[in-house]
Length: 461
Image (cartoon, rainbow, N blue to C red; front, side, top):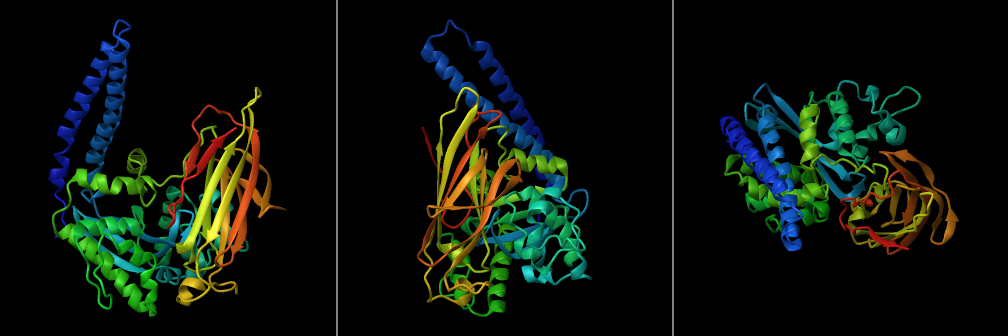
């Protein structure tokens, strides 16, 4: 039970390498076959086939790399420990959602077990000296997010709320690094990597394990209702200890069934989990550079996208009320792109419409109340707008306003705190302008994996 056959994993290297060689050979043959003497239709089909082979080559290269690295990642060369963050976008964070629960997975020679499970508060109060924990970077993390409990200018220590805000950065490589530093200082052990998964990912895993029956919950959890239970229905259980026990049961049941039964075929795993990794709902980070490179190559690193001199827009919401009102939040973003002039100058308008559909009552205080004495159902957020072009001016609800500005993760970023009453809407409009190093690059966008995702709408003059 909970055992992966490492010899079988090692045995995949040879066939994957053969496939890799065969695909490379087909690609070379197609390139040799290209000729101006071919009819346009034949050349078009040939180029389409070449594109397909190029994509398949990338997949084959990644498969070989994964098969080569997997044994070590699964404890073949010594015990591996991984931190798992269970997030919920009902309380938004830049990465997606608040980390309410966590687990430690231990892997020894292919045998996987859940060695620890707990609440974020266990880590907040854990370790030999909770008041003397420190981070040694990354410098950009401390500069931008240090004020949210990660760096006290007086003595360099972290605050109790650090673990509540651990997923604020919208970049999992940065978050993983910070987790690896804080976890051993918070009662945990040294880890080799970290994973983060949200309720949609848990629902996908339940589709593999089958329904889960929970004491005190009327209906079994299935792939259809697991996400909604984690995001909303669990908060109808008023006793915190009871909720924690249920979440522990869900996590352990999923892990035990996956490892104790027949694992899905790799192709089925890829079909089900692939879209979730692309949406930023399932992420992995490794302290080993080669293994981290694998996560990057397969699109699982949770990295904030790079602009590489081009333009882009990404809106990030961080809950600043300590409630679960983001289960009712709509964020609609549009970007009007101006014409590029001869000097390379371009302007644009970013409009963010934020609607709080939360009720003013009728739900537990844990969902609708807040830590800053605002009316029930208020959505208070720290709003950050990442852009390729720098902000020139901003209005909120049509009135001139201000936002703090700077740079982060290779982007310009403008941020502000914003309150939205229950049933209310706020509109934030940024005028952006500047010269891009590579204006011909495709526009980069990033959709934050919150509860109600709405892709950026782009228009051009």
